[in-house]
Length: 281
Image 1 (tube, rainbow, N blue to C red):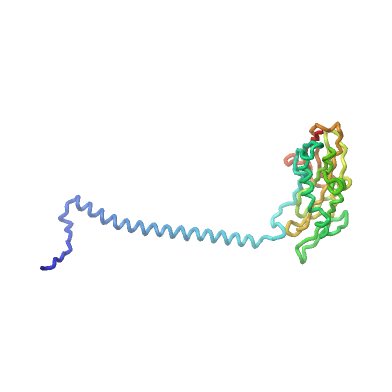
Image 2 (spheres, rainbow, N blue to C red; image 1 turned 135 degrees about the vertical axis):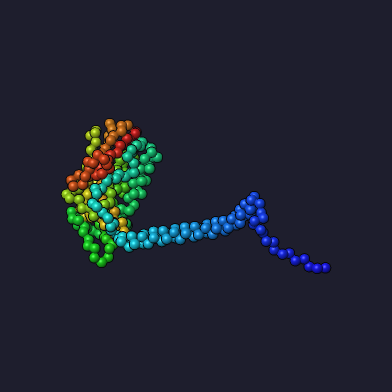
């Protein structure tokens, strides 16, 4: 039986009808366009891959160069030394409690005790006994780490929590603690102290005496350089009487006696703080 051999069929374009010719051309063009589309899509994907890798590399290089210019101990850009804010402890601007119910004021007592832990003698022993009334200036040569002046918790007297573990809340004569925010390089001119005023006359006691903030705690050199630094505190004991109970008493405390600003209407906490106290029997 003879083998059947199929011969290629030659298409005679002239013999095709216009409709058949159009369909044949569409088939050939579709094959070519399909190949070109796949090839073009791969090139576009490759372009974007290279482009975004280049952008990521440029960003990483820029950040690396920027980090090389930074100092671990001192901020590079400081246009000016701002004025510090004044902060109150316990951390509340509305202190309300019943002096006869320990559960009502326990949150304030616990907050003060926790806050003062870093001022214990066991923590402050590693700091220096500094000369009062003088800035504790330290040069930048050698070790960048700075020494800190010792602040004794006992200097807060009856508001230290050592002799009176309830900080006066159980007797309706609460203590509040005040401190200034840390500002690198700040050296206040004058003799700063805390002074509190009120609408109704309320006797107050300040610890240390007269609410003084000693110069030896300035300047501050930064968190990393001044690792053991703790801000000096001023305790204010409000000597409330029965006539003051069940009343909301506003109290404003300011940093006085220096060039530090305390009257900026745009910032109510710049060099001052206002809080309210209400004691219920």
